[in-house]
Length: 303
Image 1 (cartoon, helix red, strand yellow):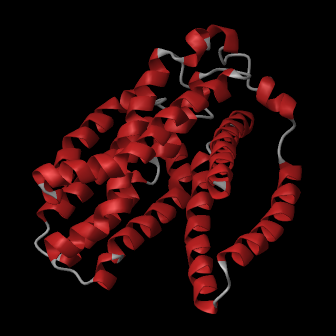
Image 2: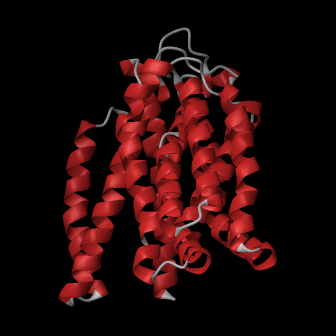
């Protein structure tokens, strides 16, 4: 019971913090007039890898879970408080951006559930279901469908995560060069190519390469969606409102994706389930017009 309550509180805080971080990143993008969202998500990817490595080391050392969590909290709390000193003041989230950016009152009607939010949210939902298929089922796919050993089967997710982190590290520079719309189409197409490689690959090696290609492709897609949603929200609290609405869709994908893929795999086989995601990703690529044609700092998306 205590653990359940703790997890509920942790989930609530985590979701709120996600919205706050992405919303604040949009404000920084607008003030600096250049994209930074991919860099923020790259930090998350790197920390996920570091966290998993630390967790594995702690398990091998024999430290109890309670001790591990206490040490982690004792270290991360002061580090987080110190890092927050470099954040912009709260007023920046309420009043930010040049005069040509729409006022929040003009874009936040219907509680923020506008056309751009629904389109971007649907794209985010599809992307998170696609990522859930990799994170939860890539190992099972490589083991059952490609005959990989348990150790080799884990390489699919590892390759996906590492390539995703690398892609996010260079994503902001690519956004500045080619614009968010072109980059979204390009990386979405790369994701489709990776999915096709996973499905038709004749060996575990080829399918693992496919998961790596998917990591490169998906790396910038969700950050670009959050950035586009924030800029569509206009100046002030509208940005955070739009980001929070899109986050509702992405979290729904995280929650339902693994179960949905598992249920479909029972009915149609896992390989056919992965194949079924391909047209969904093609639809996401076609939705790239929801992105701004240039970098988010240069041409904010207007609903």
